[in-house]
Structure formats: C-alpha cells, structure tokens
Length: 172
Ligand SMILES: [Zn+2]
Image 1: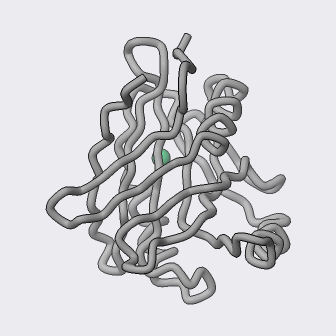
Image 2: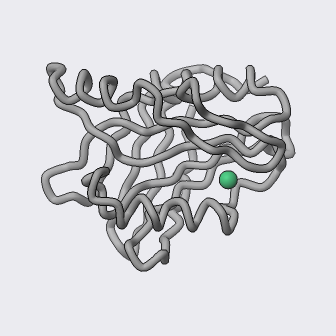
C-alpha cells in the first residue's frame, strides 16, 4: 500500500524548458481510486485545470474517469466522448474557470512510457482545433515494481514530438 501521509499532490518539471505540471491532491486521489478499480484493463479520462499566466505551469485540479463510450483493453484505451462537452462547459463556467489540459490513462503493465498509438492520438489532439489545446499533456500511470504506481508526464507538440517531464521527489 502507498502511504498517504501529508499531501499527495505530485509535481513534474522540465528544468531546461521551465515547464511544470502539478496534479493536486483531489485529482490524484481520484486517479488512484480509478486505477485500483481497473484491474488489468486500461482506463483513463481527461485532465482539467489551468495554466499559469506565463503558460509554463499547468495545474490539474480535476480529473475525469472514462466516459461511458470508452473502450479499455489489455494494452490500449480508446477514450470516449459521451458527456465530456457538457462537463467541460460546467468546469469552464464554474468559479475557477478550468479547462481541458490533456489526457491521462492507466497502463496495467509496469511501463508508463507513451506507446506509438498514444503518441499518434496526442498529435491528433494537438492538431484538432476543437480542443483549443495546441500542447496537450499526457499523464500515464503504470504499476510500479514496489506495488504502488509509477507516472510519466509528457507534453506533446503539433509535430508529434513530445517532452517528458521529471517527477519531483515527494517529501512526506
Ligand atoms: Zn498508453
């Protein structure tokens, strides 16, 4: 079991690019709960939050589970769209005006690296004007060797290239 003393917020950064990603306590707890229920199939959803004014820091304050029309398999996940637009409208019109930041999904394997399918999907999102998100984030959760979870946080570009952020050590 993972220890939950103190805050379970997790942070990632790329020192050279000055980019940071924070996953706040509540969405992190939601993510762990959803992954624990997923058994050995992939699952996922979207990341919602805000960027800082300089666009260098993304703060994820909400996270959704799989929309009803999603399909999870042993080694792939197709995130559906059912109900997502009205949910995003609610977040946007809420007091903190949060919006779509990207995707997350769970690899039941021990490998949190983006697959070639993941990379193609993120490139498509970066180039889809409906998302208003030219540099979407992909957070992948995998099982860690110690029995907890391992994470990879990646920022994608319209070219299909991406940058992996380093997870900051959590001090409990
Ligand atoms: Zn994947």
